Image (cartoon, rainbow, N blue to C red; front, side, top):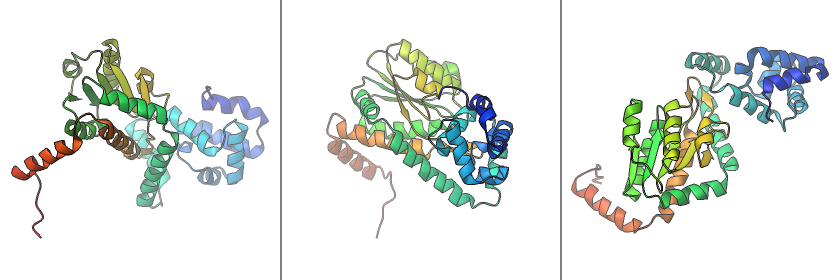
Length: 287
């Protein structure tokens, strides 16, 4: 559905029942809250049954309430400031078991990511990484944790990995100055998307590198700049986006590329174990 969901609701409003009109009014006036409510919770707030909420989503042309809610989330996620996120989360989490709420949300994000990942695109990304002349990995702000994690393990597998760091645009572009044809540029970004990451992807493509984007949806500006885009669900929890599903996707990429990496992986890690032991990298269990 290409149309903005709020426009869809307004266009369909003449055909709504009394209960559906109440739902429509609430969503139009409080869409940033409605986007993160269950059908049951939205029904309670509007004083209609859960089944009325489900029928409302169907009336708009969605396959179900979860699809309508995702459309709302996709619309607003990049619009909310941190202050607005905190307020929305406060309204949602009041009187709830926050531990269960957050962990259940993370489990759901991984489940949806597994179901929705394009296996063909995933395998293509693996081949691109394994055969790359150089591997550039770039993620800013919260995504920098994912980039550094990926870089740590890829540095154990390959000798051509460069994790891009930098607090300024000039530092970033200095580090990717020589990116060229045959290289792979892996960009990671989730709402609110990093403008610097998008610009770096654009530069890498202009220089002939293949670009892999790891982001949340196909409407993400990261996806639009990528040759291959991989998607992992990133739901909003208070002022932060949970990156559990993106980390799981990164784990899958690391394991898949290690299985296809050229060279003797066993010998590499045997050598590493000797080095770690000699230089006392890890604490030994003396028992």
